[in-house]
Length: 525
Image 1 (spheres, rainbow, N blue to C red):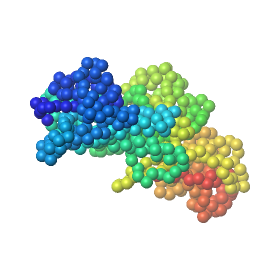
Image 2: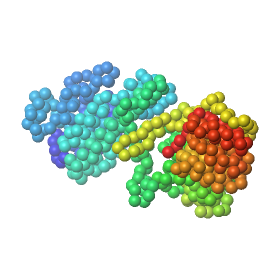
Image 3: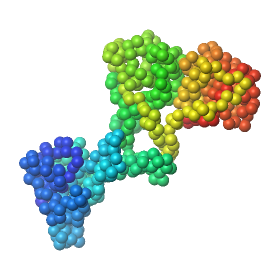
Image 4: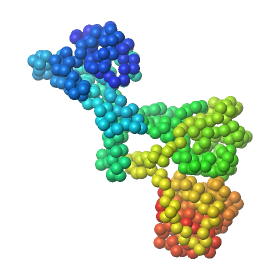
């Protein structure tokens, strides 16, 4: 569009008025006539901008408390009309429709409204914008003739394009693409809100799934340097999620860092007691609970110090100085730490110690409440998406069943509960050895459960003597329990349900192992 095109008319109707006034003032300087609505019109007029009221242009008043103001043929005819098409030009002339060259519009703050903890359904519905998306879509569809501006972040580039006389169809097409993205995300947020209402009522997963994510960070690369990558976040991400975590120090996060931070945080927030998880390649190589946080870290790191080198650490308490000092001990290297916070002296140590200060990524995140843990889990496959509930439902310990002659001791039962919580965060086939609230060995991601048991035993060495084992799915044969017995394990927890359960129970009894069947599997593919 040439800057000499006449007349030049812009329709302005925004909810977010950030930087609007200087932008519109520059449009006026560039020869635009301004048509506006309601609160936007008042905002501009109060600042001295000459504005034509939308009702004056349409010759129809705003009605129903502003619900109906731009839904009018003179508005949408001016947005959708093709002036160089004879039939459109004739219709516009006959009905007194004047073409617009630009629309500046953003939408009612629906997402911010529904994010409020006490929002009512009626309030949510009133914040569903109708006229705004309609104007945006009309203008975007007709971008050959006009531009659509949907965010304050675009004001500067639009002004510059007008000044440089490059506000052409190619430029407007980019604006149109962004506009359709905005309306799609807006509709997806509305759909998600109503779907959440259905979820609360216990209804089925949706027949149609509409997801919208905003790019938060462009990453250097993906899992490998030859792969492009970015980090997208959902609207109103819970404060307890990685999407809302704050980076306080260190180098930029990588694709793999984010995956491991999410895994470390998911595991460590399972526990009420002070706990530390140490994650490597999306599997815990160490995890421990203890009355004192620094002891929990020391025990978690000692679980597999070789694998823990270059790991991601999750902490469910504020990191104190004593814990920070243990983290910084010679020979240890940590990529990133995620915790609810850091004491002032701990933060100073972690950010000033040589080799740490510029490198270690320090993240803070809010501990999730039980309701915040009940999120859906999405897994992408070629051509589709798998959706399931996250495996975060509380354990039904009242339904656990001791199936062996010997019952676990009180100490063994504490370790079994801990091991069972860790186990569901380990890739299948998962075997976890634990003693005294500390993971001593993990067998993860093996095609055979026996292989996982052998790896866990090898990792544990003799530290698991008198300890316990957790298995994410049933032992299909007695060999897994026999392997655990050879390693010195005295108690086991598993779902049960194999056709060979009796054979496995017999092997446990023979070895003096107490065993619990939980009735619930925890596969993590």
